Length: 325
Ligand code: DGY
Image (cartoon, rainbow, N blue to C red; front, side, top):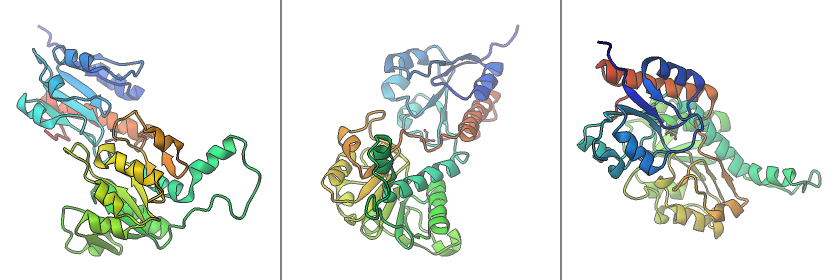
């Protein structure tokens, strides 16, 4: 008797080459309209498929993962982050989880750099005015931003993307690097290959940095960067987030921006995506992107292919290459 192919639900549209590869091996259900699935659809899918290929927009919480008559045994998440998945709940019901690290490091660091420059140079507000027909010609005093050369970039989370961002900012923009990491570096300058200083608390980093860039995983019980931390930033400081929106107390950040207590922000991620607080949309000292850190054709294809490698590893018995659970 011919062996049945595992049934796989792909929750969102993926690059064509990735979908073609999935279709070759699996009994696959694709999402050609790319509409995010509702909680009830995700819960129902748990009983019908052997695996999910999911991503950040799928909230796989305990009630979904522990749906009755669960059949799903493997979740191949497309993304380095997996805070959309309740890992404790997945562990209890013995679901294997994988992610897609490395392939998106450089692209995400590029967007962090872009946000550093766009927010300090106020390009979003300037471009919006130009597009609205309000540009009256060159002015010596319009759109004055802040120079970054020689200023201090504070990195929170010195993992792969934090390092790639710091390297770009140091060598490309001439910024000084300080960082906060739970992992102690014996000699940061030696390890990173350029002068860099580790600080021992987020408080110290917030008070020191001219630009703070966040590179920590989300999914904690509360935001790592609290209202107290934001209050410690310099009035001339900028906050950049390309990691996860729930890592920062978003209400406190909005209040600091609205009240002019910090100079600006560059955000690619939000606490309750796709909702972006109205107050942010009104501000001209923020640059707002729609969670697109890894959005290049090459990288999104590589992420999808890695997710398929992980799925293949699971069903071959060799194990997912990037197993996180
Ligand atoms: C990631 O890889 O974590 C991106 O944010 C997309 O999920």
